[in-house]
Length: 98
Image (cartoon, rainbow, N blue to C red; front, side, top):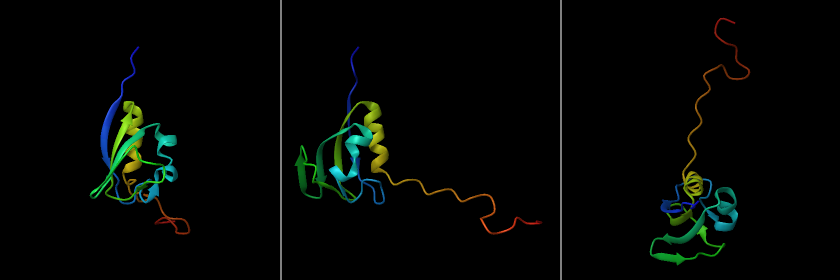
């Protein structure tokens, strides 16, 4: 049984879980299992980046792993969705007609 692997280029979004963190601080490998092969920030390019390299918004990363690992890494590069407004009455307010 052969294991599939893929590479994807991902951009760090402002407000994403990894934005502004070093590779080590981001926990990217621990959370996703994916490997960062290279980083590009502006004109700076780092092959086989050290754990101290920072993932600033706009940084582009070449990510390698199984499809599941790459998908998990991609979620960490995106800003979380804004929470949906609560449809019910907020705490401390009465519902209409109560």
